[in-house]
Each structure stands twice: as structure tokens, then as C-alpha cells.
Image (cartoon, rainbow, N blue to C red; front, side, top):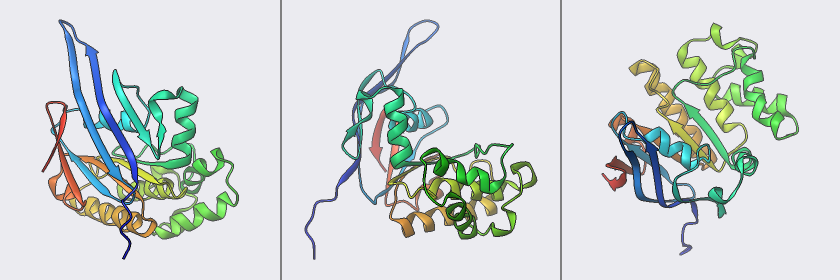
Length: 228
């Protein structure tokens, strides 16, 4: 049996996020710390407006914190410019969003091919088709998002997120726009694909049942993370 210490894939140190409000400065995060090991699944719970999505954006390098540092696989995101952060995201991250964020002018397979084409990957078409087959949409390759149901759109989004085989998957309320039954199917699919690829998953949600699928659950309270 190996005694190797799990590798830290995602680390946040002393994160702060401040906004200028109408009357005074608002501190959303106050010295927030987070460490997630490779292969771990972590849910972050929080009420609406608690800053869950903002935190996910900081962890992805989509936003820059007012203070503190973020590391992905040893690379300090907060030390990079916008282009540098984008390169790290392309190489290491996948995203699943509540609103799906599919491009309406592209078919399902074109949406899934997009991250592969942006990184210049070989066999983008074949890999995108295989990913859609994996989520049960082999018969919807040429359909546009507006001709797909909400559940089908989320499955396309999952195929797009996993097609690059990312080290880290960030999911923001991934079932929030779906009814309960469809949301459960999408969640089951996400966790199955995550396990198959041994991806590190960070999920933000207000849904305690969905969070319960993760190995570790944290609660965002008054700008800090607490174990649940």
C-alpha cells in the first residue's frame, strides 16, 4: 500500500474580495483558505448571494482577488496576466455552468469540438463525437442548442467539459436550471464521468442533496469556508 501524500491540485491562500458599495467598502471574503487534493470531490454550499460563484471565478482565474493567492497544480494563477491565466484554464480546467453557456450558432458536436480546436488538439471531430456518444447524444450531433431540451443541453455541456480530460472540473449550480428528475440524471452522469476520468471536482451549489455526493462538503459563511 502506498503512503504517498495526496498532491494538492488547487490551493487558495488568504483570499480577499472587496467591492466598493454605495456607502462603504464591502468585504465578500476575508482571509479565505482552501486546499483540494488531486482526485478529490468537494462541494461548497452557500445561500444565494453568499459569494459561491464569485469564489469559483477566483479559483478559475476568471476574476482577480483583492488579496491572496490561488495555485493550480503548483502554478500561481494570481501571478499571471489574463493571457497566462487563460492558458492554464485551457490546459487544466473544465467548466459546467447552470446556464449551460452553449453557443447557439454551433451544433452540439461543434460546441464540444470548440475547446479541442482552441488548443489545437488532434482528431477533434472524433473525440467530440465519442464524448457525445458517452453522454447518450450520439443521435443529436448536428442539432443546435435551441432544438435540444434542457437536460440534453446540460449533457452537451458535460461532454464539452470532459472532452479535454481536464485535471480540474469546476461546476456552478450544474442542475439549477433543470427539473428534479432531469437534474438527478445530469448529476449522476457528471459524477460518473468524473470518477471514470479521476478528475478533481469543485462543485458550488445551494442543494445539500447534490453536495452530499461529494467526498467533502464545505459551507461558505460570512466570507470563510467551514466544514459541514
